[in-house]
Amino acid sequence: MSAELPGDHIPPYEAPPPGMSSGSRLERALRAGRFVVTAELNPPDSADPADVFEAARPLSEVADAINATDASGANCHMSSIGICALLTRAGYGTIYQISCRDRNRIAIQGDVLGAAAMGVRNVLCLTGDGVGVGDQPGAKPVFDFDSLMLLRTIRTMRDDGVLLSGRRLTRPPHMFLGAAENPCVPPVDWRPERLAKKVEAGAEFIQTNYIFDLPPFERFMARVRDLGLDRRAFILAGVGPLASARAARWMRAHVPGIHIPDAVIERLERARDPAAEGTELCVELMQRIRAIPGVAGVHVMAYRREHLVSEIVLRSGIRTGPVARWR
Image 1 (cartoon, rainbow, N blue to C red):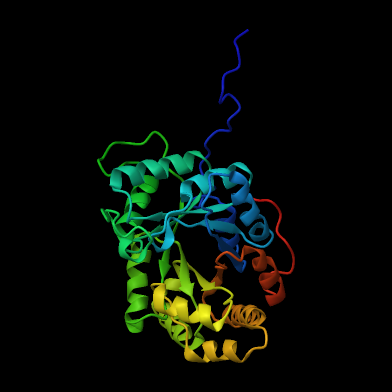
Image 2: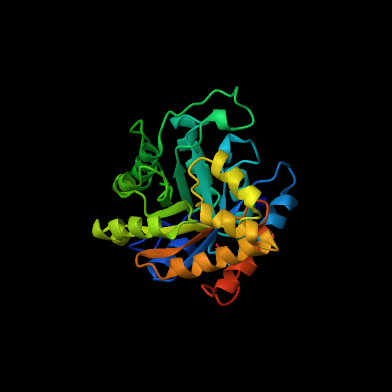
């Protein structure tokens, strides 16, 4: 009788259902027409997996998938692929973020295969912030790809079953492809055309940066509908609670791609409890965003305030109860 070997009980690597890229919970929910919620997990400065799960639990109550950021703002934290490996093993749905800033095409293609082997089924393709905005500005940037080339590469690996070298893959990575967009940042009129290029490159879902000013976003979505992009990709609007007027000013001045109108900052300044007002503003925005045609869901970003996400989502009414454990 042969001894049992490690890996003997690993389930087979299965292809997604017909008509789907990955079969992930996120993709299934979007293709079924449900208004979805994704949420961003801010990686810990730690090697302890317990820190990851502590941040993930309040997100998992309401989110269809959890984003693991990839050194956002060019600041080093636990890696996106490491977080996705932990959460996927525990049964959570994840969105693996890849920034082109730090790795070349050889490393990126290898990481995509590794992530797929671990059960990761959603990926967000990003060019990445420059190293000059981070806490280690002396780091050497790579930028072998930009987000468009990254989308094309993973789509080629998935759909054609080959690496960029032309070498054939035994099993392709089944990935639901995503990209980011900044609808409210100049040049605003150009943003829908930029989005069209990402969709053409392979993006199937889009997560936007924070939306604090609805009129520009409404104009963006009108153009998106005119171009038919809402029928080719699922648009998830970025939202999040502001802690104070001071925090809002800092974000506006220092975080790339953030537009916060003066009226929002003035509202926070007038509030007796700015943090509570920031939460209420987020709830109101989510309710109004849901009514915009073509929006398929929201992406909630609560930096170091993950504990608020479940409350905000449930108060908004876009989700009436917690979701089950998922993948």
